[in-house]
Image (cartoon, rainbow, N blue to C red; front, side, top):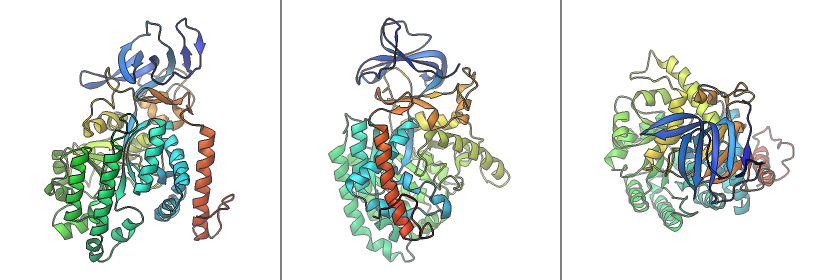
Length: 493
């Protein structure tokens, strides 16, 4: 059955009108990944009723009633994906550039030098891509508080669900601390870091539950090796006050793990536990340098969620310990990080690269390994992340939950076979973000029939592209592209 999108009125007449924000409607899909008695359940030829932004009913079969209907018989309807780690404004300027030498920090500095309007244009382009690929919730570690403010402005306008916070220490301060050769640099940074923590605490208090409750700011420390016990205690206090937890890079490299062992006598995970840093949600990205003999049990005890970011180093980046984490029974989410905003593509990368990694490490890894499946990846993208946030009202298609969902064409060219497939999650391994047809958060459509509808899509592309060209021109002037700015760049920061 090829893909189609039809909206029907009460008499069955076909229309293509977008449902009014807040209005009740029904989505009839070829497959629905529902939540039933504590576990996911696939329903074929099912419908989902949305009312007042929440899911009112989920049933197999056609809807018997007079609500407006959106028919997507070739699609699967899934919960909106939750990315446990993003740097939204940083994505597009590095795409296709980081693959050259693996370095993205010069771009980060240039992004930070943009005006507020330019920053908003860049944020909007990246957030539009994230929505276009079905990701409705982001744990957003903006690379500065300015970037977190930009994320907030766009997210509130577009009805996005987010947990934003400025990275602490922020760009550009973090680079000196992170690349230090002398730990005196870390100790000297404490007063300025404490000021950043306070500024982010104030940001969180000021904007908590903005956007009709969709925005819940979160403390976002950079990493364990760029902090001291004093700054950790200050973050813990601020996180407890906000009540939304902490979002870290944790053990992202052997350098970080070795530094923390040298300074505090234990691994980053054990150090966090010793400081009591898990009195609320705890999300840790990358975690490539864990001590597999001890860290998984500690992190599981803390209730932490490991955020696996398959495209963290760009399309040619190294793999991360997804099969090891699954094998150790860790809670694992899939995160976008940056560079790629295509959540569906990252689900695929997690499974495909994870299976290759599992095979390659089978003889050498000291602990158990899992062979990742698309079911693992989808669960991590939905219910695992929602549980880590302490929420049962997102990450699932069930009555009473918020109507955060996407529909993905699994029947058409390249993804399907011209007919509704019998095992629909497997077809996601052939899909990408352009296969996503509809996206809604709290019932409000942000993407409808494959097009952004919360803003003028063409204008978002035009303005975002102008900012990226400006960043690339500055990189070219610094010699990044052999000293020659890309065609059409023309501007400098």
